[in-house]
Length: 241
Length: 376
Image 1 (cartoon, helix red, strand yellow):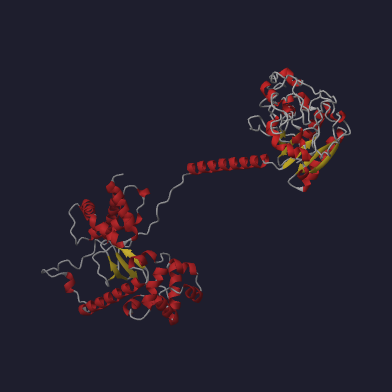
Image 2 (cartoon, rainbow over the protein chains, first blue to last red; image 1 turned 180 degrees about the horizontal axis):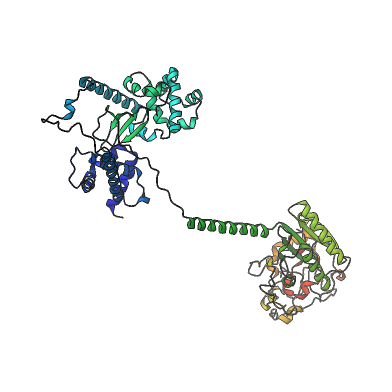
């Protein structure tokens, strides 16, 4: 095994657990990703192409799912990229009979989207997005004090509906008992025992998804109205499926 | 379902759906805070696992079964070969039988030279302790070492009381068949095996010989050696004492005053060069000594083997020739008839009498000084 391959494998192993290392690895292998995209598109991709974004995402998936049993990493990543691009092509093919809003109108150079009346106020939407960004930034900073990041939460979030329902039940109990949330903010520890006892759920299930509970319980505290509004149905006690 | 973009990276974006589920998706030029509806979600596939084929599973199972069988067999052999009980038979000689868990004799230890021959004639393996004891006693009866009605000391140690009683009753039954009385006691009461005499160079020979009973199927027992011939002429020389000098302050010089004692040949070994003359002028050797006296003579043991120097001065106690150990020999006169022979010391049970010329007469190499046979 050559030193380059060994170095690549060590970087892949590191990128599995470190999002910054994954970003750096993707940036370093952008020529490879472009090359694989070009093979599929039969042309050089431009940064605006969704195919290039999907190829980068496929490369990240290859990082997360790679093991030595799968063979050489670059061959595996190339296969992943090609499979993802094919999937995307098939998905786009289904909506091929539809007309794009960016298509030109009949008579002049105006786009079709411009001819349609917009029910949303563009300025309000811009303000709303900025406020949402601010909330998400605050949430990320507060989550750092708990030692978790968004990527950690995405990895630790419950995948099965049953597990998700258990966690939502515990969050609902915490929202109904502000003292639990106060204790959570004061001690910076998830009161698993109280949540498990109060919500009548298994503590072990909550322990497995502690990072996810940190994020959702923080959203339940004051200061995150937009985010709370996004998951309002969950906080009201029902699960949205 | 709507997804809120929570974090954007080069290769992916973290989204939160309305069910508060956090997912990773392709970053199709998203911005943080943007709401998207149809993202490309990450496929959470399981890590590849090592597939075990049907053939491989059979091989693994077969190997595991073989290993288990071998372990079980080894453990069974280990359990069956462990010494669980000990039987010590003391008549004229001492035999130590080691029994396994099922009461079969595994090894027989003896403390005499011709005991090896006796052990070899015992037969194959898988004999019970009672059968081996029967064979040993029968052999002693045939050789005349014991006679009908005698009491034989047998010491027994078993792993539990039930086994002890079983072995005891079996041995007593076998002894009764030979018209012998078996005095079966616990192994704690057994006398210590006699120590062999020290050699001239100070090294001790192997204290006891352990013979694993031969399996007649595998290796037939060798033909018995000629009992009249000693095993080794050199060994005979080492153990054959010179003419016993007198026991008083003025030891009688050796028979050959001018010449040192000639090397003893095998034929000479059976008959001492100078048998003691039971006369009034020369005190005959003492067959039995007082234990206290023996203790005082203990440091002289090393010198007892060296032949006395006839030219040495006789007045000095330090330079006087050391009295060699009293040889026990059938040709010697009975010690009870000796003039200075004192009363016989009380002999503990099981200790062979030193004056009995039974087995030692057959093999002079097995002569044991009397001091070694007395209790300490």
